[in-house]
Image (cartoon, rainbow, N blue to C red; front, side):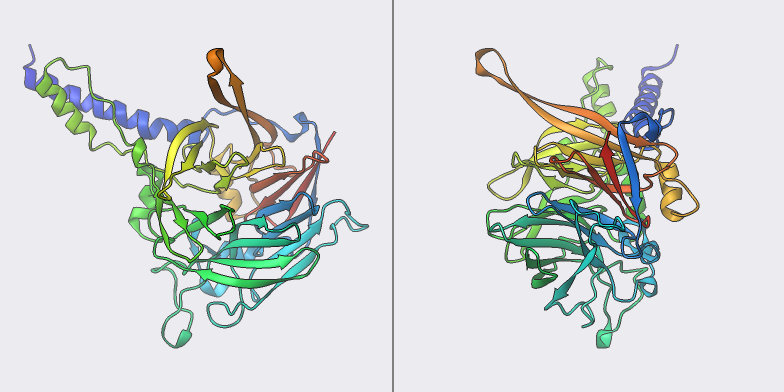
Length: 442
């Protein structure tokens, strides 16, 4: 008969192994990599989609729709440049950046024109010197807000190169990018945006996307998608979590607002009756990776005032509220079930998200956007509020698949989707691939 010590030892091993599988490996297999997931063909959905291709419309990681002005804005870096320079993808070859940098492009969504390019035009930056005085931008995610009906304020993640002595660009492989958030302003209908300020902070190290908070004070939130810029700890983020959401006020003062710590509670072991052995088991469970944020990606502020933060690893959208002390508190979690990139609200307040049903294949497609496919799923998240008995309100979220493209017949590597409520069209962009996609409802 085994001794009580051996029994506890084997119980600890089994509990640790089972917990490791439940907390880490199971999610990696099923949610992150989609083992066993059935992916549908785009032909099964009621949309007619086409690619909008132009040399300028390459690697448009993020897009923003001015519903009233009927204009779509796209932040585009160029495919070859993105393959060389993008910290989120561990691409840190400074010399591979596109000459002239990224561009903000504007498209008139109700006027495709004879060429189908929607009167494509560039919005030129003015008053911005850039990291080395050449006014170059390296754009990733961004957000915008309309101030007075005619003025738009943009908040851009700018992945600047690191600068050494004598203002020279240096190797970024060991230091990462020297990222900032750049704030610009423009009048609708103009082709120039004016630089207002640069926000640099040690609290913003791997920024992915910005969420402007409104209110006229210039405050915003930004996701740091990894725990550090480079190194081994960064590689472990996919397993043990890392990254956070930072808050920055209008003066450029930033602080950590949320990193998932309140989700770090491990349930006490109840399978062992003896208190001292239960304590030992709980002690062993402390060494199991905790459920911190895992690749927090393209966050947004919903029309309900809440903050929605998607994960590219665990397939969840965390619903947060802003506290008076400018930190964030978790109030709900939406389980989508696959890696998510950017999420964006439409004019009705519904959230649209681009996701990766096969992360392994998506990774191949991001590395070789011409030779490999990168399947895409588009989700809609609709918030429902029911008044129950006694006036108690019940909040729920309905997650619906809108579109999926298993073979990448049209969609490939898509990272952002914007839904035009007026026409029902979907405008879809991609971080690396050289085109936008427009989908018309049938």
